[in-house]
Amino acid sequence: MNLKSFAMLAAAALTLSAQGQQVLPVAGDENHAAVTETNEERDVRMAWWRKAKFGMFIHYGLYSGLAGEFKGHPGGAEWIQTNLGLDTDTYAAEALPLFKPAPGCADAWADLALQAGCRYMVLTTKHHDGFALFDTATSDYSSAKAVNRDLVREFVVAARKRGMQIGFYHSVIDWHHPSYDNTICPDLCYPVNQAKMLKEKGVPRNQALYKIYLHNQVRELMSNYGTVDIMWWDYSQGAAEGERAWGAPALMNMCREMNPGVIMNNRLYSFSGFDTSKDGIELDLRCGDYTTPEKRIPAKGYPGIDWESCMTVGDKWGYNRYDVNFKSPATVIRQLQQCAARGGNLLLNINPMADGTVPQPVQEVFQRVGKWMQVNGEAIYESSPVFEITLPEGWMCSVVYEDTYLFPPDIATTNDVELLIPAHEIDTVEPEVLGQPDCKVEVERIELPGEDEPRAFMRFVIPASAWQNAVEGLPVIKLIYAHG
Image (cartoon, rainbow, N blue to C red; front, side, top):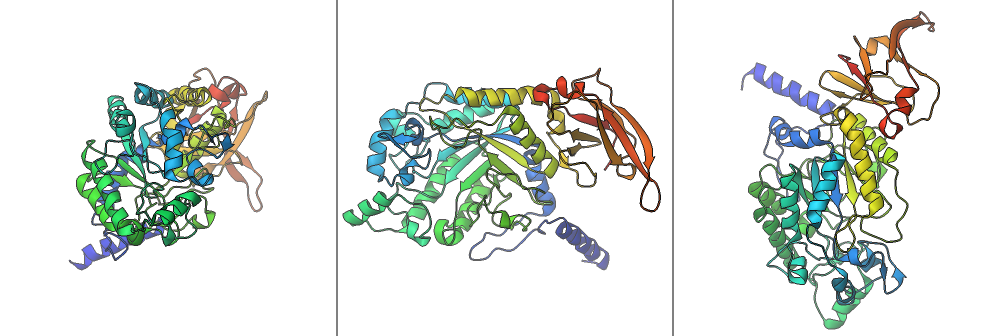
């Protein structure tokens, strides 16, 4: 390598480091698989996901039929088994007769995703209770054995028919498999009576055997359903992570070998989506391609790092009949705007009931978000964050190729609204309100007194009708040919 080439590579590495990106390729170690691709190759692989911006999460499983209670005792949703300390036999005896997916339920999910403007879908293939939604040779604890349905296959067919990228959520935690050893991390959630039952029966924990089971199930998912675009792992804590708990390096290598384009999150390694102290810390790409803040959107995003915020419409991930605290469509739209403005994706959850039907209030939120996306989706899809434009509190913006999009605050106003942007931050502008061709935004360059000398601003005056006539009261202003 000549000096010039070395200098160019060094400069590129410094640029990537400055952006918070890890320089690839990078060697592995005992706890991590090596990443053999270059940053340029990774950018190609990640391109569709970065452009998609909006996905549907689907939490459906054996717990869905319980609807939040066990024999009259409330206990949450997908965590009900451990919340109430139930051993797997007691849990399954009550839940299995209630699990009745209706024909075509996966088609209904995919239709709803399409209506909402989602570009990808992620289904829970197995949650923490260990019940698989696919036909697996490793266990009889599955939808294939319980109701003669491979729901993962139905999901894949439905999603692909509608042009969606597909993702598999897969829990590495397992409250059903007898060999699974939760004691690797004593704080890791586990049903009290399941531990008691195994002890009374003299069933030894053997994480080595469980890892074989886990890898065999993932191999089935990787080989039996065509191309898999996303593996959404869940989850690790403390010492229950990586090689020790899941054989993560081999697991990730297997996924990459069988599906070279697969994108994986970082939850095979100890991570909490709720822990804000992790914000701003560089993502080790040996742990996964993107990080997953849960039920929150980081205040400043993660510059240079791929991230996705997973959100619920109500309070629960799985179905709970008492979960009625639903977000408004406007709240979800603002979350989409925040993700676009800060450089992330939004993965929005549905929680089907026992028969696979999506609760009506959740359906309505997705449908109304979809109507907003039909008008304003160009400001979300393929967007990049803009950190160089100074905006008042409540305002956000994204950029898509040559165009900048302003997201005004959610306000009810009868008065025109003035917006000032420092003139040096934007170039020639021709503002328009998306979907409102008759709504004219005035723009002019003005000078205002400064501490030492006058300061130049671009002054926008947005008519009150922009809010009054916008879908869900949330207009988007497009600045054609504006540059940050």
